[in-house]
Amino acid sequence: MHVSRFAIFLILVPSLVLFSKPLRAQAAPGAPKALASNKEMDWPRIQRGYQAITAQYGTTARLKNKLAWFAYKFQDAAVARQQFELIGDQWDRDVWRDRERFDEARDWAQKHS
Image (cartoon, rainbow, N blue to C red; front, side, top):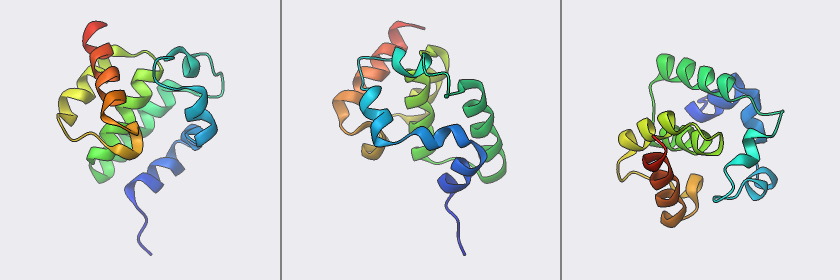
């Protein structure tokens, strides 16, 4: 049975299970403080999970987009900026929903670096 890289990522980082529609609605673009104030989310743990999965399995455009999204939501401009540089124009509609949200987060990261 083949398990996708992202499924493994979710297994390694249980806090990412919270990346659901209710959470996305709570933390809509334009409100980056929403996740930072959520004590159930653990930004350092998410970063460690990302490092572990990419070290073992490599990365994908989707994983880069996911990390950029979390960095934006946790107001970590340095990590967000780094991921946006790696992403280039390979933004992921499933992560950002539309190009405007992607651009908004990317612009925020550039301004806050």
